[in-house]
Length: 324
Image (cartoon, rainbow, N blue to C red; front, side, top):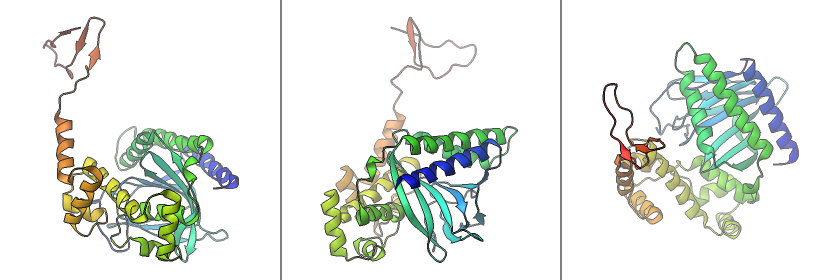
């Protein structure tokens, strides 16, 4: 991403902040649906995806609804929500969106353009190191939930969440080093495709090579030369990362997680998972449950003369005291 792209990104976010401050930034969020469904013509992500409309329109379709995103509008698609996109240019300007995605301690921002009639694709992209990624995710998830709720302070809370989220985007564009953009050319595009389409069971070296207009052998050799990792291993690793998130945050069965992560055979998924994590998916989930059920070892409150390990005691009862 060049300096002019960064400048355009800063300007787009500055404009969105001004709109949000004046309560003029329209937020669109799909209603709650059953997540991680395989729907023809749709895809989903294990983390939220965010769109800022710049030029033209995006027609979003979901399992039970559809809506259009236009300029000066902001869209949050929650994790796991299947969706399809058809884009259109404006009366006198080509289509253009600013899109944010979230990965492991990594934030991506890219400009989307109309690559083929109605089909959006990445024009330029940059990955930013985001050790505070959970803050971005919390704000995005909270904004989506607040949008679909009613309450006396709903609009005020929503405005604060959007300002905080856009402000964080603006800061990371200003201060981000771009060190994660060391990959070049087709290797970089291949990584983007894998992260965007890992739930597709047909995703493989052959498929990616076709999308990038090169031979599978050439792409495999180039990828291994640039990253020291085989492309097939990278695809598996990203799929396992998605499965880990599903195991940690959802009640899906192991088979459902396997299919949602791009594996057509749950047994094969279990073998690959064990190769990467040293445990089967069920063993990993059991460990998580065991950790969650353990008693908190840190005190709730630290006094000058004692530690309090209780999590709140009803009025009239005395909390146990632990001498320090």
